[in-house]
Length: 167
Ligand SMILES: [Zn+2]
Image (cartoon, rainbow, N blue to C red; front, side, top):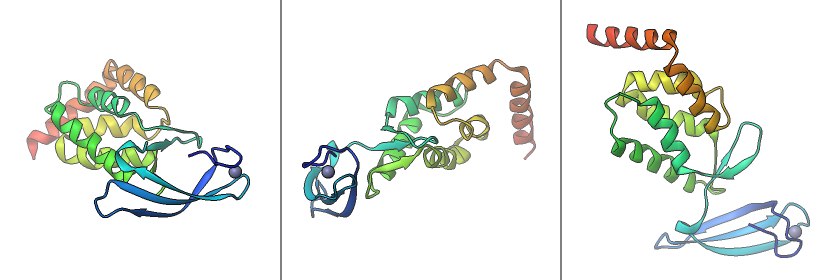
């Protein structure tokens, strides 16, 4: 949200109040550059959610990117596209409920892992083994694809499946 006075992008939310129908959010903002305070009325479904990357950079939440990385982790596993959509919904909703509508890439990773842990242990390990090291989902997808072709990774996966059948 740009400052109306100096057009700086650096504004801080001082107060956030949702309307009764939940469709509008009234925000009191302060510009971090010039100190100007102003109020905005934003329609909640149009408000973007931002992802704060490990290096501090912000980018709009990209649902497709998240779905792609989860799809790669769930390759050949019994996790349906609908379940992945559900995880993406959950992440987006969690972020949109925060006052600043920002969520760190780490928190996204942990939210996804929380759900995957219950859905599929192999997909969980695939996602966990690489997600934490990456700030950019694109790098993450590449790394997962590389790992999927790596025999050591597949062995880990076999071992997991075996230990599963023992339980
Ligand atoms: Zn300003």
